[in-house]
Image 1 (tube, rainbow, N blue to C red):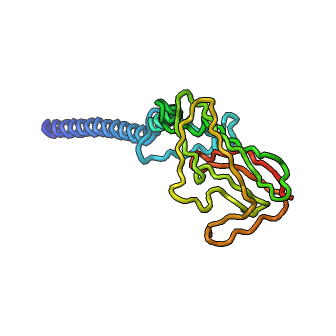
Image 2: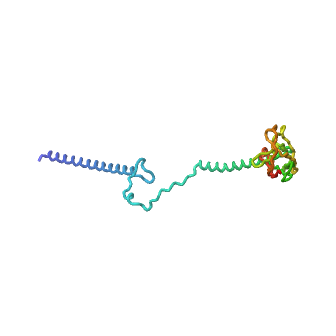
Image 3: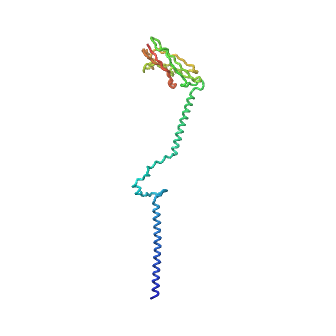
Length: 251
């Protein structure tokens, strides 16, 4: 046998074994890389409790969907968290009450300041008492009804008030019929400023001639008919100050 031929067979066999071993190693490496890649892909697509892959929606478990869970409960609404705006509104509401109290106190102070402080200041209507009393209940024949008008101040200092017939108007009515008034046909300004001392009344006598009055002072005044009448005095310029009503009759 030729020695060269034998050496050639050994060389060929060694080369084949060498490449088979290289291919086995390369195949193992590829398998390991494939397994690692698969594991990474599976991990990246699975949603974890701490965070899920953005845009990935995990498929529901068929068993969990088909079987009702006794632990399932309606999702509770989150408790409202106080917002800065809510706290501001609460503070504003509280401040609104404080502002209202401050305004009330200021208004009371201004009302108190309206009372006369020095002699000669205008009287506070709340410190005036007005009354009108009739001389009698029935007037017969040509007797003219008379009334006693009084106004008293309860202020601590002397104060002034206009007692003119236009400010302190005494009116006589019969039902809804306005029969007579001291404010009708008054010549001049009609004002009468009086100084009132505390507890000392200003007194005026008012006499009615039993005739009607009105805006037309030149017309002939008609005599009032027998019947029941009501008289009272009021002052629109003094916060609606008025006297009690007096009922009397003409016969």
